[in-house]
Length: 365
Image (cartoon, rainbow, N blue to C red; front, side):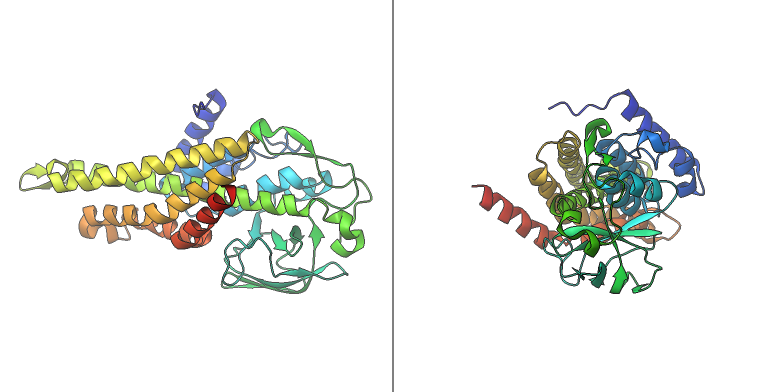
């Protein structure tokens, strides 16, 4: 496998780095630079690219631990709508709205069989956790399937990251009738056939089983994009923490010598380097396979397990090597460790990811 990026992907990485390094309003400037529309179809003013290019932006965001809703909007929202939304839904959702997703439920970060239900009239009832504010949310429901809701609409209450749904109106992602063309997010954003055509229903109940005929596949893709995006963001967060720490031990002196020249310090920073580079390889492999349209589930689970198990202790080592400086609010390291902790929670934690990986490997033997 050749993981080398092409000229377009190199340009995306450079542009994202330049924007994030020079901006005091990074989210707006990322949008101005076109980096929030990489996976948006070209007919809507986007670049028509896909998972790999989106992951490059997420990695640069993580490398600087910038507080922007990139994971939810780009990975969970834009990629999923670009892959599964009808033209009408893409026109509505991918032209200026902020997107998010409501996946996790109490006690389960990525439920294969959501407890959130859809009534015959197309309304949704359930509880979701870890939800951020957005103009529209993609909600996983029993079926499984994915629906679109307005979090500010009737029957929906979002407070403290918990989304309470009580007969909230919903629209199935992908519509219901057959035939309308929709862009599929794969390598180079190749087009595919998804969703419904003119006359598509706006409610789950009205279009019945036809509306959710691709629901399980859409649900599975949303989970894949969620894991891939979180791992790409975590890859950048750990790499950024490593860079800060390497510079600190190189320039900070003790007893007249740089800290990096002490054997114990050198061994610890080497351990962080190994953890970071291994995570990068695992994430690159997973994202590359997903972008190329290959079976990426094993690779995604491996990357998620490594991130949740190895990134937190590596971040703690970075703090240890910084001493008290690492805890200062004026120094960026705390943002990296906070981001890594958030991503570990998002993915369910190390034990959960190890269980998922173990079950997958056992089932494949």
